[in-house]
Image (tube, rainbow, N blue to C red):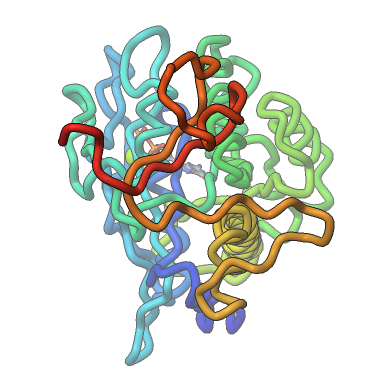
Length: 341
Ligand SMILES: Nc1nc2c(ncn2[C@@H]2O[C@H](COP(=O)(O)OP(=O)(O)OP(=O)(O)O)[C@@H](O)[C@H]2O)c(=O)[nH]1
Ligand SMILES: [Mg+2]
């Protein structure tokens, strides 16, 4: 508990709380998982998020708003730097949220309490504090065998989008009490139950998320008081989510520092090339350095008047010893006034 309660995002991340996105099929237990974590930290069963079955005929999601829930403790300074972001359940075919919609949520482009049922309204600019730092896929252990292929494909596609953003994913396997009667009686039996173990493997295979990131839990849905064995399963899952988010943030900071280093090196390379002439001149007090030995110095500029080269051999009749002796290409300097003006 202490590891979670004392969690602080690194200063460089520029955020106050870590955000975890809850994704899953309709009735997978997303909202119940938030309530369960909330219950563990409050020490009593919490029901802040609405849970239950939506429309039984259309199998629509009960949750229709995007909600960011801050986790708080019962203590005085009771705020854990952690938020769960609850979404509408994934529906079959083109209905409901698409993987692209989920990617917008991951980018922090959907505001808290936005309506999701009538098409997602995304913002052009995302706030850093609304970006997602870890994804939790909620999978119903009881109905996993019958999960429709299009839901599986949506989950895979959302995972791909998360991976491209370097986000880690975990599986929260809910309703383990419904697949093992011993676990239903006592949650500490979950680790000795072949039935639960089988579902853990199935969920890992269906999502492509490794076994050590797949956590069986029993959400608080029928209890009035918290039970230690339930709490331990929920805390185990929550601690891993937090560690994943921390790893993501550390990696993000490292990548950004590296990108900055590459940009700085590139800029100094470009700057170095540009300043070669300038730096040579400034090193010699504003004058260009002397040419290397053996280089013929250019002729000094004429003191005044006009100058040029002989283009044609001199054919004039006038006696002019200087011009008569010159050939084509020789330099001519005339400093006096033209004949006749
Ligand atoms: N027995 C049992 N029931 C659960 C568990 N988790 C959730 N439920 C029940 O499953 C139903 C759906 O739970 P929700 O938490 O509302 O599911 P959701 O994923 O938020 O559903 P939508 O918002 O409709 O997408 C509710 O009746 C819960 O009481 C669990 O671990 N065990
Ligand atoms: Mg819900």
